[in-house]
Length: 129
Length: 129
DNA sequence: CTCTGAAAATTACAGCTGTAGCAATATGAA
DNA sequence: TTCATATTGCTACAGCTGTAATTTTCAGAG
Image 1 (cartoon, rainbow over the protein chains, first blue to last red):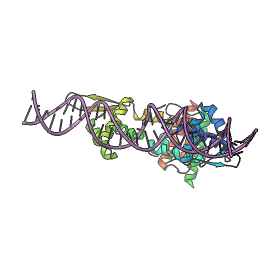
Image 2 (cartoon, rainbow over the protein chains, first blue to last red):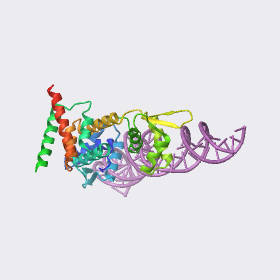
Image 3 (tube, rainbow over the protein chains, first blue to last red):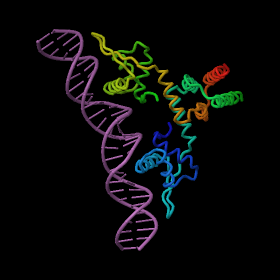
Image 4 (cartoon, rainbow over the protein chains, first blue to last red):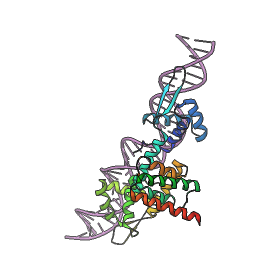
């Protein structure tokens, strides 16, 4: 099961992930999140704190500087775990069933479909090995 | 956005969906859910009540009989809405990105992959029309 | 060292959720 | 009609979550 990161917490994580592996200072993180979300600074700090408690963020503090935050797991690792969890819970682990539902009323864009086609081709090729 | 049905509430809904469009009596519903989950009767009744409040279940009561519950939305409709919501929130609407993550460490079974292939072929065919 | 402002940490609240007890109502037997 | 049992409805609690205020600590200027 993926680490439980709520939708609000994801707003913070997405900002840290976008900054790359060096992380962000507190000032930069708040400077990015607050305008996007309309939250107060207190709200954002609580979410940062909870993310630290659950191990998604870590902070360091340089002498003379404020805290700096970095992600403790990558965006891809979390998305992989989370999406596998969704497919397991809702579709018994069957990714095709998920795709059938997602595309049931809303066909993918040409780019999306092309990428899907390539994924299936790659999986087919791997199977033949 | 799909109606918010929690994981515990899903245990109840899956049981009602499995019973088909005629619904289930309270006794049959409790009789199916309690052994599967280990919950108390009170717990299950609370979840049924909350599902009724949010419009996922409706109840009828025949003279001389107890309540009978039926789903107010189909399993497929809910799964479609829910999975589209997940793809939108986590992958910007790109289903191929979700498939890439789901299959990243865990390849689909031969049956699952065959079904995925047919889905993509159908979507390709629809595109050509 | 003191004081002020900034930053971080702690506390708080309301609704949601999982879980279950208790009160009220309905039903059937005597 | 009365009583006992079954069923339904209401209440409760703790942790989670979104949101934010308040308190504490830190840092820099004088």
